[in-house]
Image (tube, rainbow, N blue to C red):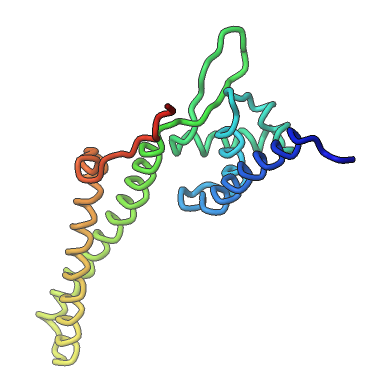
Length: 187
C-alpha cells in the first residue's frame, strides 16, 4: 500500500530521531550507563510530554524493571528528572534540559575519584622509592628509583593540574572561560 505524503514525512521524522537515539545509546557508556538506558533517554528526550514507566516500557518493549533501572541511572546522572502533573498518580519523567549539569556532575565524579586514587598511589610509591633510594646498596637500584621518582613527579604535576580542572567544573568557573551555549531561539 502506498504511503501518504504525511506518512512519508512521519517516517523521515522518526528516522531522524532514531539516528540521534542510536548515537546517544552507543556513546552513553561514557556516563557509565547502559545502551538500553541510552535508548530510554532518547525516548524520553523526544517525547512531547513527561512519561510514566508504563509508557516507557510500552514504547521500548522492555520490562518495567529494566525501565526502573534505566530511570535510576539516568536520574543519578542528572539526565532526567521526576516531574508532577495534576491528576496523575504515577511518577512522570522528562529529560533535564541542562546538559551541562549532567556532564559536569559525571565529569567531576569520575575524574575526581580516579585522579584522587591515582594521586594517593603515586605519593605512596614515591615515598617508598625515596626510602629505597636512600637505603639501597645497589647503585643500579638507586638510579632506577631516582628515574622512577622523576616519572612520578611528572605524573603528580598532571594530577595536580587535573584537580585544578575539576575545581573549575565544581565551582562552575569553567563557564567563565568557555560559556554555555544557548540554543538559537525561534523567530
